[in-house]
Image (tube, rainbow, N blue to C red):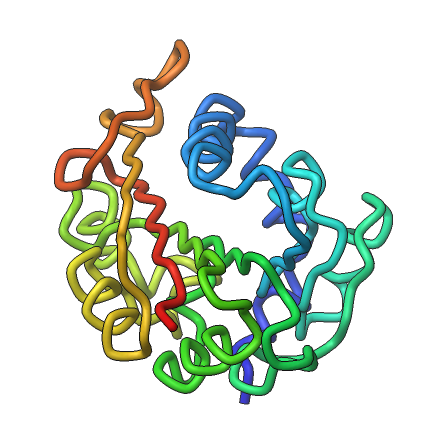
Length: 211
């Protein structure tokens, strides 16, 4: 069962987070954008309210939460109901797939990654954005997991774990971008986006579908 209940109930609370931390949101967007292909048709899996898909120019999103999907539609996204473990796309039909803070809510991450591999064209890109559980922010979220309506049922991953799972499912040629180097409340100017991982709390990972 997809973990949609908190998102169904608290869609506006989810939206309010981005208004509260605009510089964090901007940094995450820039990290993801730096790894997305400039050409090709793609989709965001777990599109939520379209906060990432819309500014990144992604026209199609998959979302199991109806209230979240309705907000994404208002942002011009074509929203398809469904889950990452059973993608409603033809094999080898997409040039890239994006998942942002989605992996922690998947019921079966290996199955979802295999499905992503299936729908991507050869050489297509799979971009994952996540809060690294080994980072300061990741550790804070873990310590306060039961206090957060969204993260109570989440499973957090480290970047190394995500890369290992992506590799098992056929992805390689990995690239990384990291950002959010300070406490969220301390960010009062633009955060840098740097290559690699291990220092920033938010990390974007890109892997390519190997033939």
